[in-house]
Image (tube, rainbow, N blue to C red):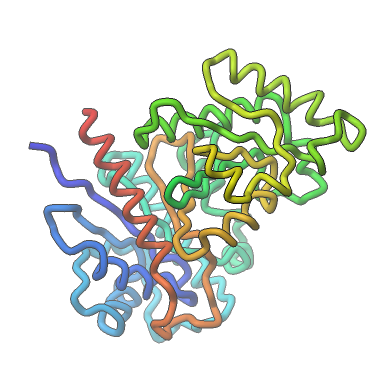
Length: 320
């Protein structure tokens, strides 16, 4: 008999919506101990307060990795102490996943400013978790149902995005997307490749990256047996008629993919890190300081993140 997956949530920034959406999502989605064992990493006092206020029936085990009392929480405020609580929760959960103590991590949103003001250079969950896993070839994926989007570059200035579009990076990111699509049960995934420049570069007259880098990368991917499109003009890639033809999209830089994705699936999007040995999913929204601790935050995204993590964890367990 296969064992039950162990799913970990990380608290997120306690000044944001993380604690409340976690307890509400657990109460709404995790109805049976036979489905999964649920753990939440963070401050016991903060998490128990969230459970008492928003979801008394939610069942989970707290893994203490912070000591901030609820009385010290400043809802809606940037707070270095809160940033550190969130940071240490992610750190501990990732290390536990690497050691096999848990099967998947679902991360609630963190505030980058809060962590940076605590004196730690922090660009995001994706990079931090990949560093803990000692992985350099990783990628961010946004997904919602059939829609899957990966990114050649993520948290870098726009002025550096073009230089990050390399042959090697495009090939690696597309391979990671292809692999996760196969894991989700697609036998022959169809992948759309975004162009970098307007009008896909107009055959080199409006930018040369398509001719010099992107098209050679596509040729290499096709040699490896992948079904990858020619470079798509970004302004027509995310319309329904185009997306219906594909299972995944390779976006060249952060906002090229994030803006249309969030317009299409903001309330149910899932953020995943590919290319690392642990399963990590997350919400596709921020800390929502303006509505923190009011009990009104939408739980659609964190619920979808939980179900994605659970599905992947079950698939891995069943393959063993």
